[in-house]
Length: 283
Image (cartoon, rainbow, N blue to C red; front, side, top):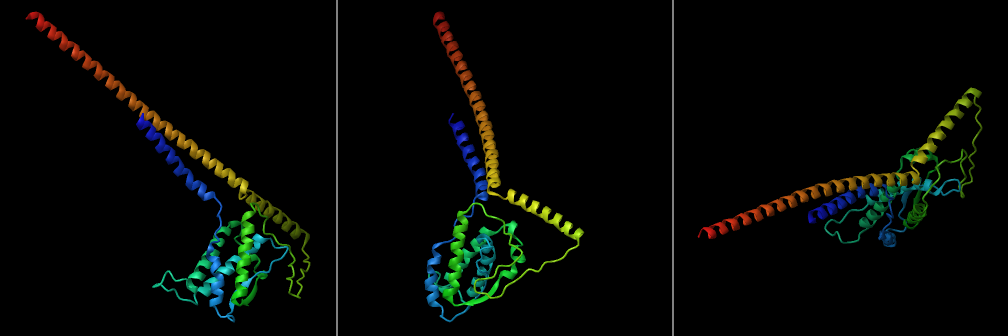
C-alpha cells in the first residue's frame, strides 16, 4: 500500500506541473513597476539642468482613451530612454555602483515590461494609423521624467480596469489645449454605389472587430483557463487511477504468492512431522 500511496502523490504533483504552465500563460502581466523609479530624483540631480531629452509625445485628450494613449506613448518613451542610455557608459568593473547608466537601464527595463504587457494583435496597427497625433519635443530632465511618471500612473489605473473599449477615434481630430490651430474634416462626395460598397465593408469590418473583441475578452480567456484546467484534471485523475490499479494488481499478486508460499511451508512442516512420527514408531 505504501507504493500505491507514493504513486498517487507522484501523479498529483505531475498534474500540478501540467496545470501550472497553462495558468501562467493565461495570467495577467502583474505590476512591472519596481522601486527603481525612486532613483529618478538622483538621476535628475546628476544631469545638467539645461540638458535636453528628445521625446515624441501625445497630448491627453477626452476622445483618446487612456489605454490607447498608452499604446502611443510607451514605445516613444522606450526610444528616448534608449537614446539617453547610449550617451552613458557602463562601469563593468564596479557593478554595485548606482551610476547614471544603471538607473537609466532600470527605467528602460520598466518601460519595456510595460510595452510587453500592452502588446496585443488587436492594437498592432493603431500607432501607424494615428501617427499624426504625435508632437516632437525636447525637455529638460525634470520635465521629461514628468512624462515618465504620468505614463506610469496611467498604466496603474489601466491595470485595475479589466475591460477596455476599442481604440476607435472620431473622424475629426481634437484640438490640443495649447494649440490654436483647428483641423476640420471636409466632407467627401462619393458615388452612391461606392458609398454603399464602403458601407458594407465597414459593417463587415465592424463585425470582424466585434468577433475578435469577443474572442479576446476576459470572459473568453476565463473560459479557456477553466477548460484547460478541467482537461488537465481529467488527465491527472486518469493517470492516478491507472497507477493505482497497476500497483494494486501487483500488490494482490505478491500477497497471493506469499500465501501460497506459506501454505507450501506449512505442508512441508506437516510432512516432516509425519516422517518423525513414523521413525519413532519404527524404533
